[in-house]
Image (cartoon, rainbow, N blue to C red; front, side):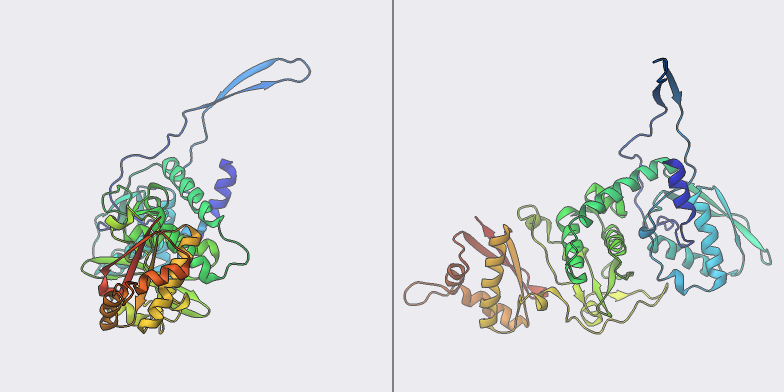
Length: 410
């Protein structure tokens, strides 16, 4: 098994490198979930004599990190010059083999190029979160190269154990992909699985890693974005990790669907904790397959590493595609009926409707519970048509996004 893993690792592309190269990146971690056994004992029984001989062997020490190729994105790497790729490749080889020093060609005395490449490596490589820090050694103007010293949080064996856990968790999600699924349905599955299976939590010690999102169950935007990218790669869906700023640094994804690019922000589609804890199946879709115009309302894109693709439309957004978008009171009632019926049939306890304008949003809330002469309300009539006899409530918590959330208790 070790030999097989080594063979696979030697075929890895040069784009693989450390995700933990930035001081602003990963949280410090101190332990892993499993220990590597010190030795393995077994018996050999000879068929002709029945004699049993016990042998004890120490496991072969793994000296390299062995991630699946799908944990690497290449959008930024493919846009580097040949000289920049040479630097990237040297760092990749050093980190994969857990070397303590790497010699880098000195082609930019300002140092800006190296900072850009290190940051690109952190963004596009999800597996190498074992790197703790880097330090540039002595250099001088005119030097042909300089040394970067590297330190690590984990041994290759420890990190490989964690990566196998990530692979297993991803395989569980991928097992729900069927042959007749469209790419849209696959993307929705990945989006929903990460939201319902992982808390948005800044306190997790692995929160900014793919391990935090898929195994530990606590993640920041970086963990969510890298896990979503990994699942897309497994499904063969072209994608890009995007960085930018809201009130702080932020990370999300872009995907190519039917020839067009769209933004997906798993983190911002995660409901507030007070709702998520009571209604764990609740998912928002405000930032599921939207265009640049929607993104520009809440954040700026950082193009210092590479220019992300342009996204000209939000036509594939869930609310438009599922009939859960309301541009009139009548269409709102229709969407509520559809959402109520679908949620009840699927055993879910929530659904959401997106409204076209702030004015209509306020009008819908007022009208739903207005009683007619016989004491009936529109929301009660909708529930009856949907065949739902439980309790229903709704909240304007996401009014800034014009999303009306309905909560069902039955």
